[in-house]
Image 1 (cartoon, rainbow, N blue to C red):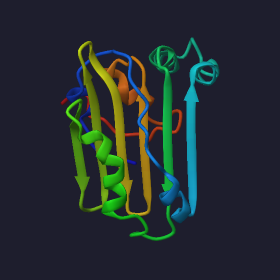
Image 2: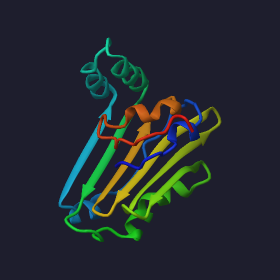
Image 3: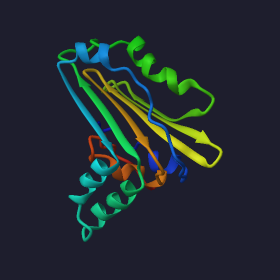
Image 4: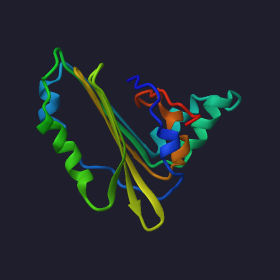
Length: 174
């Protein structure tokens, strides 16, 4: 997804706290999708994924450090043959757990030209930020991301393009 100028880095505050995996039900949507991707990386498997990253390459080393403390990265992408095969009601089933008082939507970007939307939610806890969820939609694609564990949210954009997380263009000057 290429939503130009999405100011994630500047809008997110740094914070870290243990988080909890969201309980999303994908069955109905998966049945209608022409293709789907499921990336579920936890504990040792997550560490294995970072073992392929270089310690000497500056960008890869940053990602390796960022991912090092996470408990899990969960990404689901559904592709459809034509627009309209998922509905606003489908999206609301994924937003519903994010409407509680502990969750707050901090980024909402929509492009009428491309039909793309990105929403970023954080879970507030006593110790700081305790979870992160991203809902990214295109006319024929839906991606849901849940990152669990301590994360420096200022560095969140560094995960884009890795572990199945959509790459987002970020204007770091804003």
